[in-house]
Amino acid sequence: MHPKALLEACAELVAQVLKFDHPADAVVSRYFREHRSLGPRERATLAETAYTVLRKKLLFEQLAGSGSGSRERRLAILGFAGPREFLKGALNEQEKSWVEQCDAVDEATLSERHRHNLPEWLATALKQQLGDGFWPMIEALNQPAPLDLRVNALTDKRDDVRRELELAGLPAQPTPYSPWGLRLDGKPALTRMDVFARGAVEVQDEGSQLLALLADARRGQMVVDFCAGAGGKTLALGAMMRNTGRLYAFDVSAHRLENLKPRLARSKLSNVHPAAIAHERDDRIKRLAGKIDRVIVDAPCSGLGTLRRNPDLKWRQSPQALAELTAKQAAILDSAARLLKPGGRIVYATCSLLRAENEEIADGFSASHPAFRRISVQELLENAKIGAAAELCGEAGQNLRLWPHRHGTDGFFAAAWEKDQA
Image 1 (cartoon, one colour):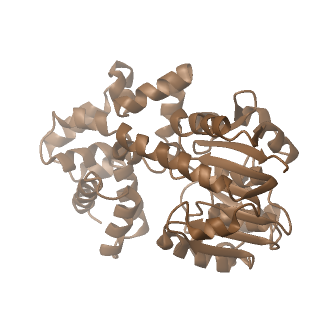
Image 2 (cartoon, one colour; image 1 turned 135 degrees about the horizontal axis):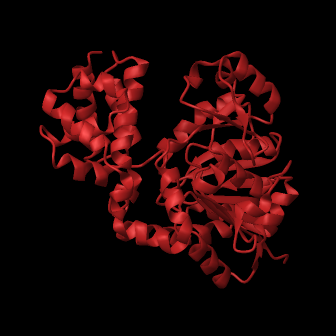
């Protein structure tokens, strides 16, 4: 594609994602469906340009003020993910001079808001939590995330899958913590490969894999994935159960559960029972009350731990939305706890960075549910033979606390409880 045509397409896509009407990944996917003639290199440049603009939106808007042309074009120029020499083929002399001046700006001279590129309410909250770790985390959030895979332990071994990927030209490294994980650089066309088609691997961040390990689902148990979504953790739990027992995948979105069906078919699991529920107090929940061995609640959350993958979320969330989410999280955890039988375990998790969605929800649940004993997450990880378990935990080993800059994962939180014996 000619540089001018590609830059024009980038500006068009940037304009669409900055409306914030829909998640950026959905907007990008729709754009590609509407422009099927685009090749893989053009798609990669388009997507990464849009995500770069979202990551550095405040800085680019400041720099764009001195440029010319439409706002979207200026932002696309600043965020352009292809070679600069290629980009210059689309620019006039004035634009070339302008972009060179912008590229020469020393980041150390920028204001804080133009260095962190976060809404002020979020920057304030994270500075309070992280202290000196704030800027290392910002640097990590502004990098694209690697591609993590979970090997299907029911059917395959990690070393065998790793060798298969290497033979296909995709070198993969074992993830440092999860015993099932492999990490790839870039974004290969994984879905076209046999290793994916036959269900040997699923795309799943290492942090999410660790959440399933905390549940420690076993053969013959009754287990509930309460907010299953597209079922990544459901499939991990099913493999842990060795395809025995009964595993319920509940979600309020029938559409998300539909996305589980092809994954379920590939996984070779037959013990999974997906079911859409109307709300957390659905009759299905009442019928199973007091009967379940393990419950995992990966609650609806701000998703701010996934900013490497979804940088639009920082602009689509707000303190008001956060307040609504925390009320929903507390209600969901309370309802899910009713499923547990005496001696059973419940795990609460989010992919958020914020204490309001994490420690505060967990501490509130403990205070209002004296029949549930908090379990040390560090001990659970050590029992699962996870090396360096202590460095994955916060607050004296009580909670799982994963950070992109410390662990190379998305941001995750998890806490666990056991229900007292009757």
